[in-house]
Image 1: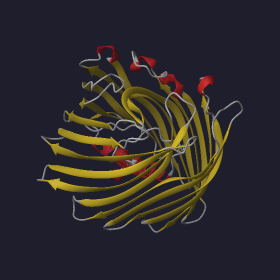
Image 2: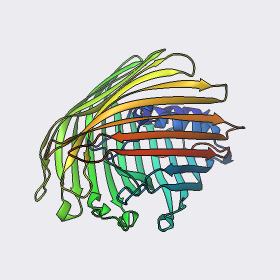
Image 3: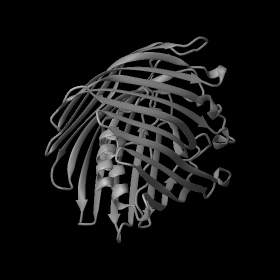
Length: 421
């Protein structure tokens, strides 16, 4: 009973405290916007309820998986002709939960993972995700404090679909105070450091990856009003600061933005909207070009059946160029369809188009992406996942057409999904 009461309080914390998101999104996987942001509330709830091991008050959920078994049709696009490649990762770890009375929960995870490349063996290395957190429900006041460090495979950016490893580490603090029955004041702060490895592009006639090394700080505050349990409206204010480490590629900037958010969950209709009107200026000595404009995202989903749905989504964000002093706006529009496959599986297909517009030149690149995913439950909690995606970049000013294909498979060996942040 005590654990269930504490869980309810923790869910209230993580479900309502907003993330202090930066306006720059260096990369997002094609089709990922259709899924929305995975709820920490749901992941915490499921992990605590299904934790396999208990040592007194301590609950432990092990994780074992083989993932990111990926085929790339062109892993080194700077070479003459396409250079295909195959990579995979395998890992094992544990997530721990420790309730302290009725109102405080401590949680942490250690998930080491080894990345293997068949051809590019110099890139074989031990990656991993690690984090600690404290979640408190103090009646009117809710708090969460989280620290994290993750080193894992990713991509340079929207304009460069080249696989690399990225290290992200930092800490965040979130708080929410109930003023009236349905009125809340919230605040959050996050400090994140992004680090890249030059070795991932060894032999390439390209600038150093470390040109993207940067520190980001974001703070957010505002008011939120809940109309019953289905509709929530928020108004807030956000400040951000980005500091680049290499002076020759300095695009450090800072600024602020009023923000608005809306979330609605009905029996069939789900709607999420978030928008910010940014005013970003260069910091001293920076080559960053001032930006005044809107960033944000929107997603609407209509539930067709118990396991089928159709989604429409859109996003506007900013991303830094690789190896230069520029940045570009990213506009994405897409649609997705989710369908059941028998009683054990589900599948989805997506298609999206977008435009990348560079700040200094105004040059625009049109991009089209499409793909499909499938997930199948095997036995107990074991499952297998498959994913295929393709991106086509329209040629600009005599450039060749660029296309990227990826096929990815993953396997979970009957243990729960790891909770990370």
